[in-house]
Length: 104
Image (cartoon, rainbow, N blue to C red; front, side):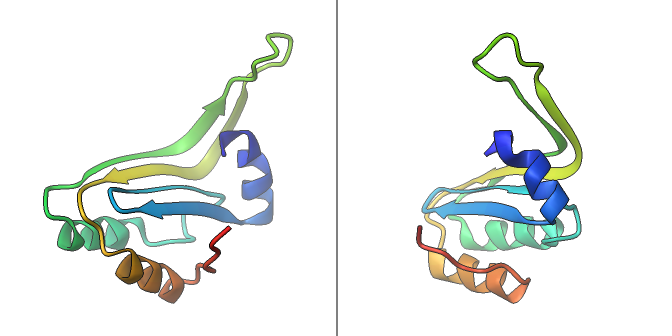
């Protein structure tokens, strides 16, 4: 995902993946999803205390050493881990915050 961070920022788009034990995403703008509410939701839906890592920038290092690393500021790069998330509830809340669901 990180190699597309500049395109996500330019297009004000984001990608969020949800699974039974994680919510991970890269948002092109900090105001796309209310992160505080997403963390609160994760706490209520997890059977154990979720851990959250959130950054307002990202760095992608290309395998081609001749290319400079891509650093993008002003985005949201996050991962929330927990246990036994209700995927339908998380998807419902994300959709309510403006996200579009895709099963691709």
